[in-house]
Image (tube, rainbow over all chains, first blue to last red; front, top):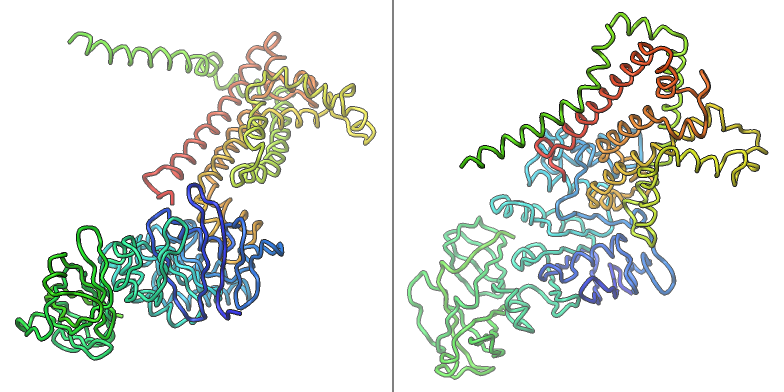
Length: 354
Length: 269
């Protein structure tokens, strides 16, 4: 029996049939990624008890929150879910403090407000306690909503498109903060997003959901390197490599290789991304073409046509995918087991802090 | 070219005719009698009785309407169930019912000879020709005005707020009191003002169901009709008071909905 969150549900939505089975261990972070209308948010609503599915079970540490066969259906207020809504759903007529104090029900009014105040402080909102949501910036609203969702010390965290309401500038910082907060909680977490890179940053595993079903499940790198379908390949887009940033744009990848990027990143753990179509393949023994090129020895693992191109799954310490023309496949005699050199420009390497 | 200028002129003319037609009778009430005469006429015992009775009965009716109508409207606004559309139509029915017919209906239902008449009589409650009967008539006629507005106000509350409240540990009742009502107050208040205005002006149903007895069932509109033949200035004076109260209600509705629901000031999320 799972110690974390386990759900297995079927539910007929307007145009699709939702049929998912998901298991999230304590402390694990799962991202549900897929196009809008695929049923991602419905999964969160089912976990939170806001939507009762046609059939299925939702269990936390073996305890049933929902079991349609046994007739168990706990009300949302009886489930311990921290739910971050897409547009944050802050109560517009309450101050930031009032919003965060709302879920706190124990202690005197003063104690509740002081606890809410402490939470606001933790989220860097100390001076904004009296502001109404309309008077806060997007990033501040997100932090108030997160503080409010955590005020009840939830046993499960549900994040619905947590960054989509933010502009591009505040998104990177918010994503970092969110990752820090979420990983320090140690509760099963489900993040819903339509953005693969966002998913890779916030979660350690990704389930790709298409028309109500999970079509592939794995780490971000596995999905990017070995997409099970053209749909996943399209969605994943970028390769995701984890490593540690050093001074001067060099990144030491987990697994030993060294790559360079033109992105500035402070020293520390990072995620480097590169699109498969930016990677060229050269024969084994190919010599580097300058300091601004990345050259990684790799072994071909799989070859799959994607549209008019060919997607080559590689193993280079970490999984990696390149998208090349059929002509290159012939020229290099690519087949599983063949050794090659994967090359791409430093400018094509984007680096995100982890 | 000529038509181009003619059409805007026609629009302005139409509006002018409409405004004159609608405001002339109201202004005439104030111009026909001087302020001194108005205040004098208000001193008549029947007038004060009527105003006091109107205030009493409309207050009780509105209290009942709010206590029953608010949760009923919330149910209609937040749940989808079979028969919901029918329920909404039934709630709105008194809006289109001629008031006299409403009075007859009330007599047939809860009058002495009505369906529930014996049952009500056995409890010792008197409705017909009693102040309680006025309250019943007002409640019947005015409640749709409140419930309709309340329904729209609750429907306009972002359902994510209600969902958020539930996931934050609040049950349905707490969500209703702490989130739904505060976020629907402007709509509820304008419904309240509309229903109150309708109740203040109620005439037909009250006359048929409760009669027109001074001090017991003769509310201000009934008193005005009773005075028209014998004491025209008195009728005018009472009318002037009703006009002022109605105007105050209308303006408060405009202020409430204009300042609190206006998109320019507070975003609706």
